[in-house]
Length: 329
Image 1 (cartoon, rainbow, N blue to C red):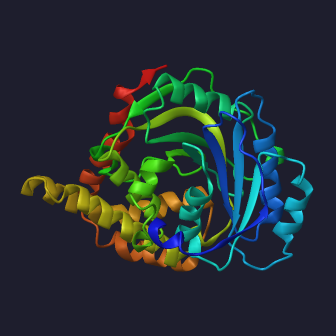
Image 2 (tube, one colour; image 1 turned 60 degrees about the horizontal axis):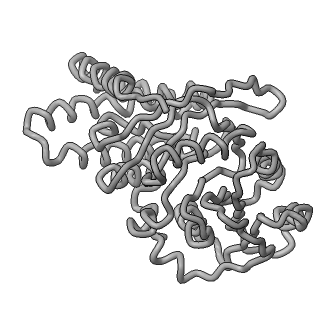
């Protein structure tokens, strides 16, 4: 559901909080049946070492009352700046992602998955970046540190802040941003009608491309968020193929108004994209799915040497071109 549709679906306020005076940032957590992991996420939000006021909003996509998540949130009844809502019906992933922007009321909304964590100086760093840009920012996308469980985290905090202004071309060869801990200008996202489920599961990538055409969005270098790797549906063959298919659709749309030779080169790049996407996905999720392996062997036969050369050139542009536009704050 788009933002304009999701506002028609009622949400129930289970715990009403208070937005601290002067708060411009809300950490918003969409959740669904992951109470144990959600607790770790909430604790990382409450461990912020800052005097900067901020709110926390949890939006539960499980309409069942008395569930494990609801029981967990009762432990935080004394946290004044924490809000907890339940959707009256399951609105899907994109719907719940859009719902957090309806229920958050500050200028900027941090989107944090219910299994991810933030460092204890996250709010300080984000506020510093926003202030340095006179709060004239549509979105901030942060580098993330990957982890499997909380006990094995090796801290990689960032002291020197570097940012880069993003343009549509930066997304030509794939998604270069992470949703974990991303900061959005709430009013701009509402104007754009939020995430579009037609691009599932790549609706975050599609939104980023729209945002670059709309105003200032920045990639922030350094570690601010921690992204948890779990065995989930992102690693199965059906979802992997949906991801690569929608990614290719988005990349093609970026190139649609370019000269013919440009579009031809992008076509060769996309011919090898699916193969390389699967290889990269297997490394991230450490999976050894037999169906995925068989499919990979099949498409490897169809990719030409020229396709692979163009892919490698595109990958290098994607990886290193933005580096030369970084600036320190």
